[in-house]
Length: 188
Image (tube, rainbow, N blue to C red):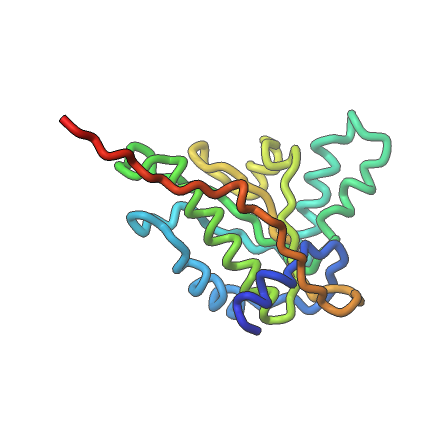
């Protein structure tokens, strides 16, 4: 699949089943995604792959975290079973570095976008899910996050369910978002 086709046909997939990429294939695709722009090559991110029983433990943690506020904790627990692989994205900024944190976050987002395109080109579907659990102390503890790390969400990854033929997105007119800088001649 060429890059333009991947960009124009990738969608966030809500129904995902087996198979998902195995650990080796995920690492291979991540090596390519890691070539995304990253000033200083800091790689201010890490991934925690959650599969099988790990999904069950994460789901229980979700349910426990909101049991008092939700009438149906079983539905909350089921969120972790929506895909065979939950790739947990952790932002690990290099604090006090000459590269500002906002730029490190931009690099992390660029890498993630590249990874999603690579997954799509391989026939896998994904959706980047965030929400209140990214701020949960219980979830952070379960996953072993350090104090200086931020949970940016999960890529739910698997094989897309039956869907209509890949439709290319219609490109929006974004010319109103482009300007051209033309300085006036300064005379002294």
